[in-house]
Length: 554
Image 1 (tube, rainbow, N blue to C red):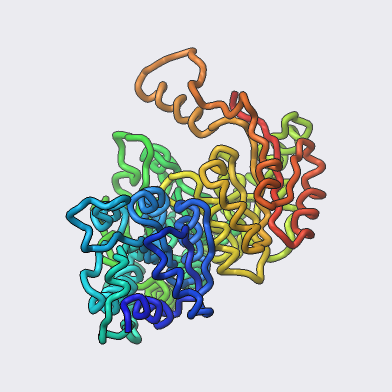
Image 2: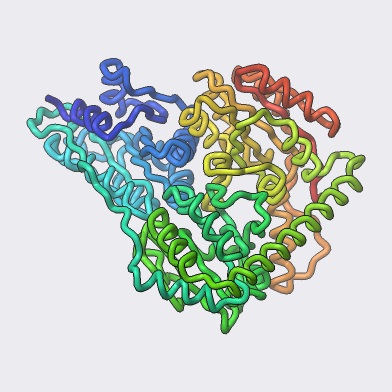
């Protein structure tokens, strides 16, 4: 058999059914073979970044390994930004790119480059088979590395001549690997000691709570321990029910903001994530002196990477947290149970007061023109059909998106990691492919949408009934907030305007752009019209775009 056949058989051996790509000449070996493999559906993107962004959230929403096929050096370069997002999201992915014939290596062929070196900084592993004999074993290793915790993208270059070489080395997979082990029992007992001694504990949940199927166990533990619960700042998943009385929202992006949020807690336990990702430098610790700090991770890589810990445990969350919950239940006395009941009562009262205050602010601004982003999100949250998945890249409205909807389980919400924009509407393609039975709503800012607007064509081409909502404030609002922060932090006091941050002259016309790519759409300027527009969008049973004009910072 030829190397290309081994590659295709290797994909099937690992349960692959979807490939996201942007075709090119050096990919003909793969594209031509797709005709012989109807089990594999190829989703076409008009830009490599869209293909990578779609595969990123496909991997998160399906639990499978995302497969991407890009085109030589410029195509791989176009995908690098989205690959960075996948790396930060810990998405198990295999990114491939066709490579020029190896017999031309010394002559610097058109589009040629060292693809392995180009991909190396944004992948867990990057490789290129030298012969067809290496394709089967290399692909097997790529799947293994991509799915080892913490998961992440790997890269394989596929030279056209190697794909057409004969080989007797067949496709392979790694077999039945069971790597989910529980933490050390003695360590779990130490963790319970810390909770029993704590007067005010908190959990910080990372994405691994969702991806390791530990969600319900963490909820049960938090309730039994009476913990406040925070999420990491940039998150892909909703790792705790966002309307739960103990949920305190996401943490900020500066050490000072995190320290303020955690100031009242004498025990902080971090579960399954990178803690903490900061934007600005603060000369303070996020965790106050005297606060006990513990961390539980599935791999040694993250444990104690940024902090000296009072306790660090390596263990899969879906096995470790139930074990901890059982020990807490066995050891809890009446005094502890009474303290938990009091803490939960106080948190319920605080949440009710906070919710009431939010509703008062929304009512006070209900007649604002243009409408506020918060009011738009509130109206949107009440207009969705049941079981809708929300894919969020609203940036400055993300706190409202995180609080106004009702995310009761993993899979209700997806967002982007890494901070690079354009991932939202591209990622919604992958979410809808992974979850075809559920409605999908993609919320994006107008600036973010323009980074991957070609995704609308892919949605139309593949008949994916995604509703795209574009919040148009006609500016890069996040950059205006950040330049304010910069001027304040570096004592660069200024009354100058915001430079090059307005999306006007001309104003972007999203319904017109959508129509040019086969997607129906409309613009909404009246808050009261949002429910009708959203109903029309979902009733269409086809991709549909709703542009909502909201107020900006100006």
